Length: 464
Image 1 (cartoon, rainbow, N blue to C red):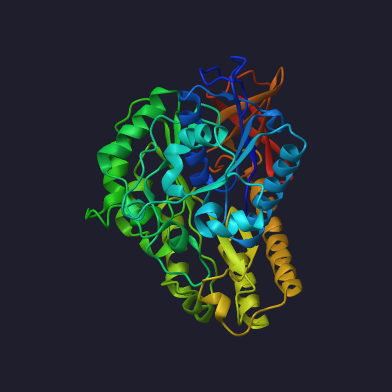
Image 2 (image 1 turned 90 degrees about the vertical axis):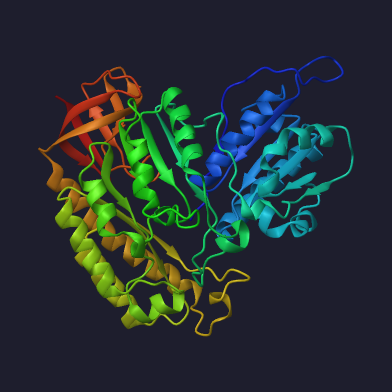
């Protein structure tokens, strides 16, 4: 849920020029989750196709585009901070125009212009593919403008093909849907992105093939609720049918499932993952809490019993499964006893990876109006306790891996004979990594390794 800042690298020439026939430049900052990354990559492609030159040094660009995250208050604060930083460059005369796009723009609309009047354009999610035309119009005008999503945007799912990838070419995100039909009391996503819409099967597979043809051997499946895929089409067992098609892509080696809603992980999906040579035994499954009262108040359909049984079932079906989850602490009304129950559950479940967030009362959500709001200091203390509990578990799991053999995907060289890589249980950007010694593998190559030690959350390995 936290925001992540990325700048584009490289300089790509086009035909958009100044009066001196010099290419106009665009600096780009991408914030937020993997789904925002896909939107950024699509916008970057449109900007380059229009003939603009991308500039890594955003403070020297003619136009700065900031693809914002607006999910929770810290993400909003980070986006506003970066926009104000860009405003300083504009005041100095180094930057001509500032464009705010993405989730915060969709959520705040004209309020964002009021809060930061230096912004020249607020671009809604439905206007994503028009970003190049918007930049061109801004450069010819002195007025700031709103470019809001039209009424049909929330009924369709956008085409994510033809992206300019930010990340290394050997892996990419494959978005399979947009929006969410869940009504979790703490979540702003349905307000921002609307109802759940599955991307048509043929379109999704086509995008996957395009990514693989561009060099991707690993695809991370992303959505607001991945295992809800197809239910609106309607398509029975939609995610399993999609996985069937993705497995047929020859050069695709790893398929990673992200953002699975626990209640939607059924026996058929478990059987599919366990029996596949391409779908890695890695389950990203946010449970948010374990106390039944808190879950009910959150608007979740899970219970402690169901979640416990599901974890046991997953570990029985796949002895080497890696489970990642996220938790929210300090939800309104959470008592010391309910929090202690969550800590005890974390100790029992022994998740390989876990993220914990202090609850934020977001405007427009049911939870923000609930009684029993908890002091920030208490929320942060609880979050710290969860993470310290998880740290010991993660370190114990890492130590138990010493002497085991892993197949790793090389990410980047850091020294002549030292490579950073990941085994199947490490998702890019959010999990730990493997430091592989005695290795010269190029990014995108698989390497057989033996775990020789640990370095915090990371594994130290030697190439076999």
